[in-house]
Length: 62
Image (cartoon, rainbow, N blue to C red; front, side):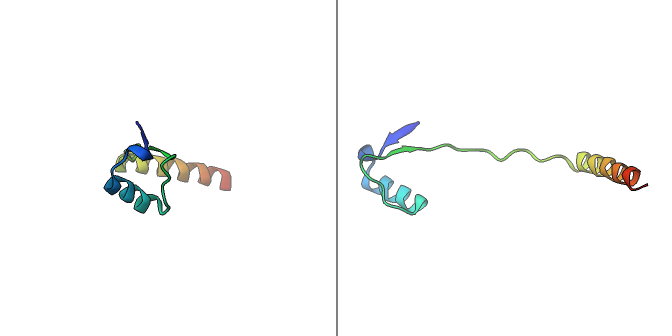
């Protein structure tokens, strides 16, 4: 969703200015997105990948 700075309350504008560390002009448009961090690989999968990498490097080292 996109917000027009001129439509924000003074408290909302101040909060955004603090978040972005700069003044917000009434002509500015503000877009807010919430992103979830990607799920990490399981411990088992990381071990599998590590084993594959070790096998690969052992092979190319010989």
